[in-house]
Amino acid sequence: MKTLTLEQCKSLLSVLAERGTEVDHALVVCLLMIGADARTWTWQNALENPIFQPFAVYQSIKSVAISKKLSVFPFNHAGFRQAHWLNTTVRLQQAVFCGTSRNKALTTQEVTRRLKRYGKMAGIPVDLMSLRTINNTHQMFLDVFKDADVFAEALDLLRAGNERGRSPFFKKAQPKKEPRLHGLGRRHTYKIAG
Image (tube, rainbow, N blue to C red; front, side):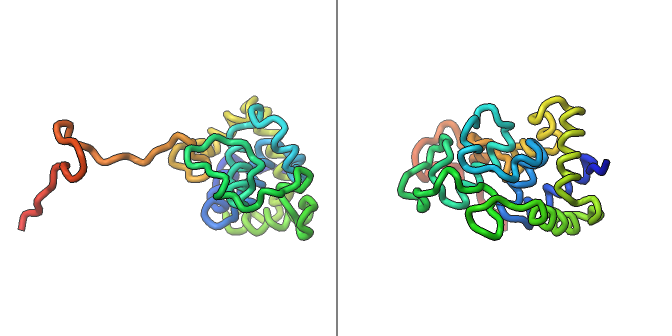
């Protein structure tokens, strides 16, 4: 039974975060966290129980919906406006991970081709990269960690610094203010010695 190590999974996800598309990254995250059934998900499947999904899966599916400008995915975001969404007529029976035909799910061969391409970039032997191997890896690590969220933490998918796994409440550090100065233009200015 072929499986990937934790380090190989991390390097694969790292390559996907740097060079892959949102859809490919989300596909691999879902395959690792949920298993091979995620390949055939429709938007209706993805929306059924978002509360009970692993957080990494929720985040990756949400990023796919945002990148495709779909308004079907429920999330709370301070900057949400209906005018920002273009594709408001998506059907719930449409596949999340579309293959060569736009409405059908990816085939096993299409998933394996994508895995081999990114696996080669990550330095993983090509013979290890297949849907069966990813599914075996999913089963093995679920037996080891007993929870998909713990597995996601081990893969560093839930780090605050991870761009794709960032919490919706993450804020960049604000510049320090001098407490006694209020209002615009009243911050301490630094002089450069010359």
